[in-house]
Image (cartoon, rainbow, N blue to C red; front, top):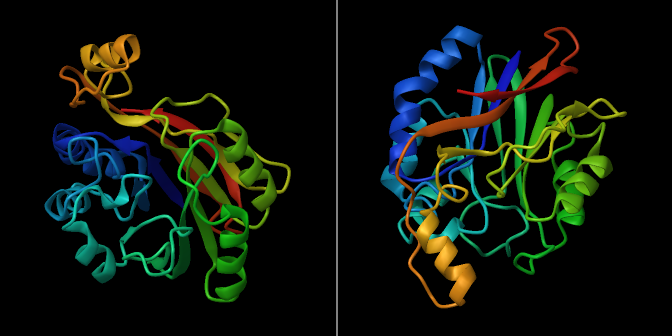
Length: 256
């Protein structure tokens, strides 16, 4: 079994890029399931309902989100109605949507969790305790699981991965838009990478127009960020699992 996790999709052009390439990649590499973080898909801030549907049509099976989850008002209804779009589980319970979902890959039951880091980010509920409760609540209801850790601090992502090693077979970080070179199988058997990178323009600053970002750093004045122009590429990681044991056998960085 192969599961592809794709880094933050930045802007409408990146959805178009995936629409032209993702199905071909799936077929060529026999990918069974695709996760694509969509929290920057609509002009960096959140994802609109039409863009979410377009990303699913492009070949994504699941869209986790992040700190820009509620950047687009129209996503709230879709979050509540769709099992394929999830927001971080440690948002307050009354926030629209759910923080995890149960899907199927053939006859295999897959638990998908989205969690937001709290170091240098929003002050939400503890991600460790939140995910512990999910695993306890859903015990016996799934065969394998994965978790998108949307977080700023590398240390927090690694700490979460070490804590859930052996309990969540596939874990990957999102948010920083820069692919890390630490793909590995942890001692407890979980596959992990600190950040998938992004699907977006490679010539800007993490997908954003360079001039605006530079001006912000130089002047500290408010600026309007926009998606950068230029060449796009998709970054992510491919997790391969044994068909017999469902153990992760490899984690491979991918760029296409």
